[in-house]
Length: 620
Image (cartoon, rainbow, N blue to C red; front, side):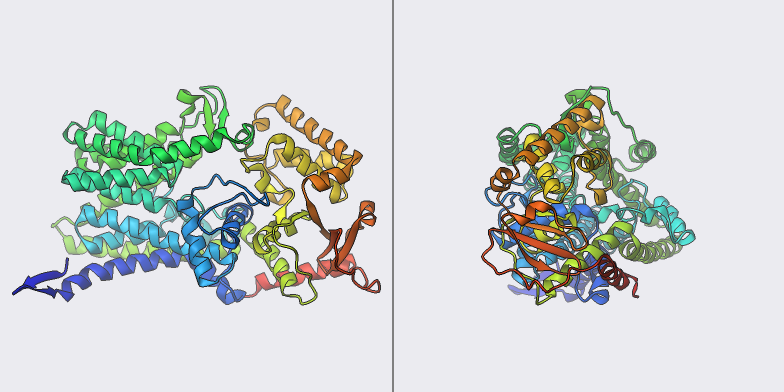
């Protein structure tokens, strides 16, 4: 380990220590660089390290992280409810980033930055440890870690091949369809999955492989603890790892005892997490899961998917593992377990957003490919030429991986839209004429304002995407919230009907779309019942809006500045702020209204405001 004993005193072998530390430092530095590169870019462009990848970042993860940041850093809560909320996301994933941002006084937007730094650090370290332990070489471990962090094909299970294909596409078509929606070029660095939970899976893989290589009591216990941690980390990873351990117990006679004990120890460690999840699921409304495709009942042979890319990669690597690299069989078994679980409805009749198992499949197959290629590169025959070729290839992957990450950060449609929305809201917060809003109050109205008010001003949105994933809100409450918010926005029944039909079928979050999941996307009769329920809720709101305003404690209503205020605002509401973008009303406010002489911004003023925000994004 770089330390020796001479005449009873420890002596540090600095050369050996440097040989261990330098490769690790290279790998970890590169991992942090490529994971957080978009934040570093915007630090230069807009003066702060803020980057919002997609709409999940803003209205799910950041909203939950903000609650912890402001109120209870060691606990995660529902971003919608003013109090006593429960989140379905694991603390092990989100809490460390919240604690770092809070300790560094980065503010709520700094949570995202901390998460990406942690993901770059953890993923690169995880790849390094697995490769270091299996190759017995720190430099080869570093090379494999850098390769897999930079390669855009890791999640697909086709490293290098997909990397070349995507590089060619972006180089040939600057306006590629890959940039038309959310960032999909580097899926490895998506938050929350797989970037934040993946380090724990890689740690478990490394400990498991070490126990198989030399099954001492300490290594077996460590592997079991590594498996147990996954229960507190990510459902899709512990289930894949558990099935992989079972498969290896069945077909790997030589190491059967290691696989069985690893699984048994891990299950005992993870049992409290399973019990807690069960309690949360059964103690909250049962219909929330159906609208999110979590434990949604379907037919055993419905929605079967056998992705060809994984089947081909698994078949090719199976031949290599069987004849040349039997030591990689546990990692390959993890991929097979993921492929089986991809269609777990055959056994459970449940849909659980099965595509999340892709992360375990792709990473496992990519590890097998990378370890196999580097093993071939280390053969003695013409070793110098082979190593030189591998080094050149590694430099190419690293350089093009960083370039594609830059393209993804600066040109992706949703990321640019979200940054423009954030800049609009930041402009309001920096305006000395803006009125401070009471933290933890419920706000209704404009969806852009609601998104950022939840993150930056600690407010609770009456209706937004986070409502549909809230485990404590039933469908009937969801209908009431969406109907009340539409009424407060000034919609009539026809407009509300049209908006809801679009929302329930659309997958575009810019139009309130939530149509990717939900039982109504599979059955037209369920869709009609959902629309009927929402229309009935809207009619109930029209009959007595004040009772629902009081029920949900709505304090603020925010409307676009160019919208004519609905008539209900004349009774019991007071306008407290108007700007180029929004007008804000407060119910039963104590503050004095603004001067009646202030003009209402015209639509042209509002459009100029938007253009000024967009101009920032086009500056190099």
